[in-house]
Image (cartoon, rainbow, N blue to C red; front, side, top):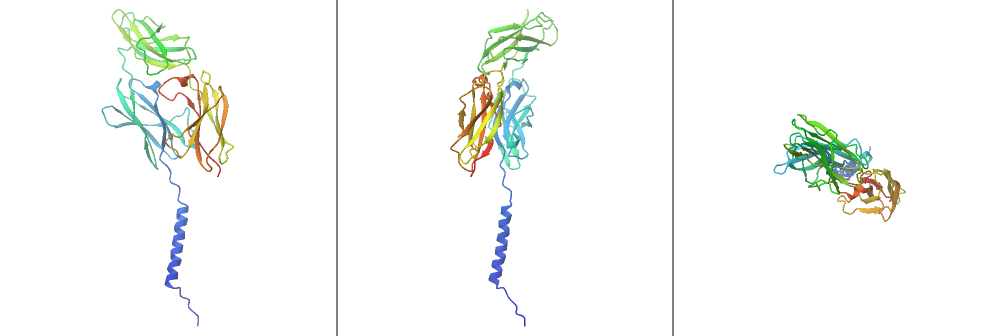
Amino acid sequence: MKKVFWIKPLIFAAIILFIATDCKKEELATKPAISNPPYICSEIVLTEYTTTSTITFLAGIKTCNLPTVVYFRYRPLSADYRDSVIGTIRTDCCNDPENGYFEYVGTAMGLKSGTDYYWSVAATNSAGTSIGQNFGICTQAGELNGTSTLPATIISGNGATLHGTVNGEGLSTTVTFEYDANTDIYDIPTSYRNSVIASQSPVADTGIINVSADISGLNPCLIYHFRIKAENSLWVRHGSDQHFYTVTKPTLKTIYAFNITATTATVGGDITDDGGSPIIARGVRYWKRSNTTGKANIWLKDDSTGTGRFTFTLSGLEPNTQYCFSPYAANCLGNLYIGVDNISWGSWATVFKTSP
């Protein structure tokens, strides 16, 4: 007679429990990591593109390599947020796809002239939504009867062409541009110490015409404010203030981290263009990636100046730890207050990890 082997109930239950537990562990081991919501790195208004009816916003966003929607909310001071414009990725510069960093721009249109607005940026992906701070901005004041100041063009290190429109209303009208210089974009002169006659002056047309004037002998390290002035036998009219600066920010590339050990790494940047004025400061800042507030940034300044490559060997780092860094460079524009970041940055928050 064949023997029949019976598995005791307690032993059978233990086997089933072991198999179930082992499967659950395997399932957890293959579950994908949870992604993070977008991180808002910077929020500014491009004041040079703000007009009587439009405001252009810009925001730097760490997308965590997830499809991300960015939108800019705006409202008058006395209203709630109900209007917004979708941000699009900037195409001319400043993106770092390898590290998931992109700059988004958006323009609100149809606004009231000379009106204060609040605005903020919001970014959302499948992991969540991040909302930036509230900021204030004012649209430009409206112009009177066609007398308007337009942005300057053909700006060089010591010269520029000023533009505007005027309506002489059938009277012989003298057209000039008044201009002055200072170090603050928001310090609009109450009186302008210099003036130049428009090349089309005098005008007597009935209707709006374009006028311009060339100026030279400018200081490359100052902000220039200017406005149009139209005068005839019946009235004197002024356009609103515009501004420009004769240099640009330096062009800077990131030198990615190399020679990485458990406690050290070498990072740096490469300045390929000084922007029309000598480099006065260059260096890097770095921080632990786990520090999302930016309060523990460490700044390092290079002792030399000028264009070209520069590197730093970071020491005292923690093993097996992620760090972020960004190189920076400044010319004389860095000493001016222009309402936006006035120094150049390489790729924002480039990440490296020390060895175990």
